[in-house]
Length: 178
Image (tube, rainbow, N blue to C red):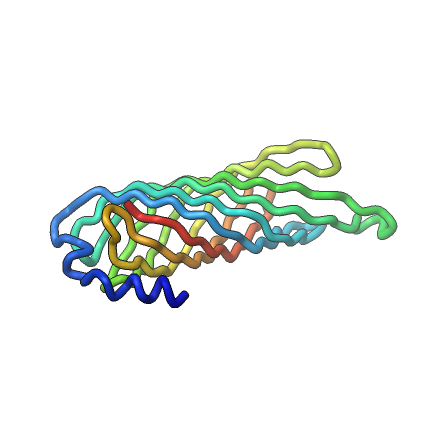
C-alpha cells in the first residue's frame, strides 16, 4: 500500500489525463461474493473475477464504454425436500454491456447494464440460462506510469435470470488501465 501511495506522488493529475477525448482500455482481476436467490434454495459462495473494458474518455469527467466479465462461484446446497441430500453447485457467469463513468481526479463512479449468461452445473448436470445485469461501481485510478495506470474497483451487481432467480454480487478487483 505504501508503494502504491508513493507512486501517486510521481505524477501530477494534469499530466495523467489529457483534457481531450481518447481511447481507454482496462483489464482487472479480483474476487466476487455471490448469492443466488430462487424459490427452492439460495446458494452462496465466492470465486474469481475477470473484468475487461474498452471505452472512450470524452473529457476529464466522463467516459463510456463496453465491458465483458467472467466470474464463478461454488457451493454445496441442501435439498429443501430431503435435508440428508446435498448438491454441489458450480456456477459460471458471463456478463457484457455498456458502462458509463463519472470521474473526479483519480476517483470514479458509474453504472453499467447488460446481459448475463449463466452456466450452472448441479452434480454433473449442466444447464444454461440468460438474463439481465445491472451494476454500480466505484474506484480509483492512480496516475499513469509510462503507458498504464493502476486501478482499484468495487462493484455491486444484480442479475435477473429467465427462471425467476436473482443473483447479487459484491466484486472487488485490481488491474491496469491503458
